[in-house]
Length: 83
Image 1 (cartoon, rainbow, N blue to C red):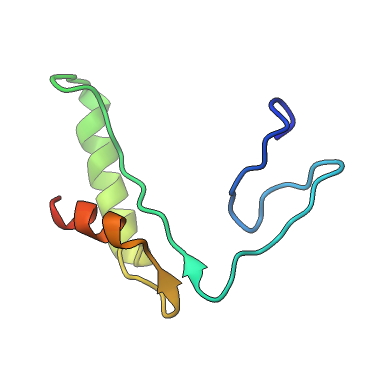
Image 2 (cartoon, rainbow, N blue to C red; image 1 turned 90 degrees about the vertical axis):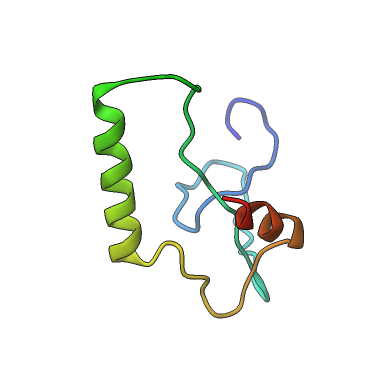
């Protein structure tokens, strides 16, 4: 926001910026799928550890469970079903 002056969607604890307004999106709460991606064929010694750590935290914190009242657009549900 401070660089482009374009509105953004962010987490609820996004730091305040001068002349901006926080408007929570509720009823239903929109959810957005996020994925870890990398270039095909990229090999890096830390990539496996990063994937394992993300999977562990996701399982521990319930990242993949849809919260009650959460909403995901139909096209995102279809896209996620293929993975």
